[in-house]
Image (cartoon, rainbow, N blue to C red; front, side, top):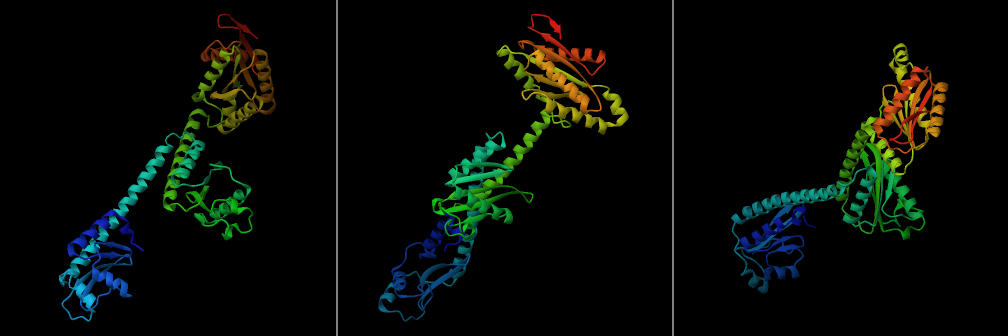
Length: 439
């Protein structure tokens, strides 16, 4: 077994330097720096402890991470009882000097410190490269689903996995489909990591106790790994990997930690987007999402189809709000919003336009849109404590701008208010070159 620092080039270079300086080999477990002397070759063949100091030969031993580093042999002037062959070989060894011991111990210990620092630096650099590569791969991810696909592809390719299952906040993704045996194995592995909130390794799917009694396990890859995704001690998802050989746990864990950060950023981004285009009180679109109306008008115009716009205003809302209080006023607005969601056709676009005003865009003709508006008015009258007035404008070929449609619908709403409220007033335009017809 080698110490961790022995995995670096720095360690090899420094050990080779010590061997050259003292003209003896440096032995570190199975690694040998410098050339073994004939004396040492003989001892290796004939002795159970070939690196132990004996009369006539001296070694210096230094422990690094519980591993003995041996420097030597040196020839000493003390009497010895070596046989003729060893004695002749000993004469060619460098002569031992007492000051060598402190110098060798110091050099080995300093080499260990330098190599450990190099090892940590290499680890940090390797980690940084891995995370940089992962982060660069995730830059194109615009939503959580895309990020999941990118992450699965990275894990499979980087760590040579056979398959990956990734689940985040209830969204499940698979790199490849799996058999029923795989799904059953996943269920048991998932139950374990949910309970422990720590990673789990199944070295051999056919013999592991966790998968006991499951069938067709021989059809699965040799090993499975399970990783929990945890944020603030809350289990938000998991990763299950299939593999023929166990990859770097640390590397996968680092990637998944970064992946959680990516998901958090995307979630915040989505919340910010939603808040920019969604009314907080009612959950409807707000004016920040008016581009949806522009897209509808553009599409309808390209097909020479109608677009209708409804402006809805809660009657006597200010008086109700002043008398009953803002919480009750907010409750009425939410009620109207819920009715709009329930009553308006599926293809409609519904906005809270401001205050107690709502706007609905419909890809419908004047008659169909008026029927929808009347149904809406009746439902509001039936359920809400307030009624609503509705102004409707339809352009039969969608040839006018969004601004004009809203203006004409607002004019129709004004007429509905002044004609007693709780009414639908409609206006129709055949083409922008023609005049407006009151419905």
